[in-house]
Length: 144
Image 1 (cartoon, rainbow, N blue to C red):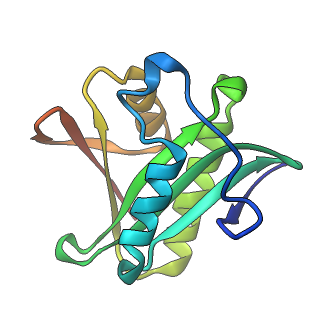
Image 2: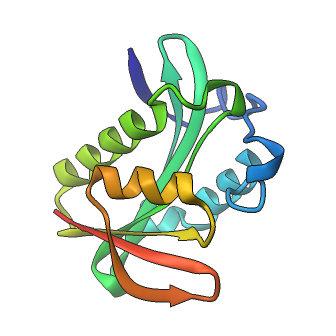
Image 3: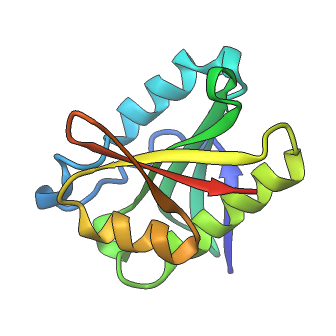
């Protein structure tokens, strides 16, 4: 069973990583943790994604008050566990947490141009392109 557990002193050093060819698209586990810390005043939430007792990935989001939205900032599945639907299932759980929180009525995210796996995943879960681009980052949104 897939579930999310907030980052804590016992689970933050798991050595999860994406495949070498994905490193230009996704932040490392330590970089994600640094971002979560940097955005702590914006209610950042960082998670380890587990399949039963096995850690398979990480994710985070935070409040973006200036856009009145949640910023779904990071999501990755470790290279050993990709292709099993964990990314979709974890993203769906994170979206449900944001809905339950109820502070905002939309979620924003971006992916780097060329990351077709991310584009497909986010479209499958209900995100759409806003038409905005920031350098090589494609902006997407989901209305809650």
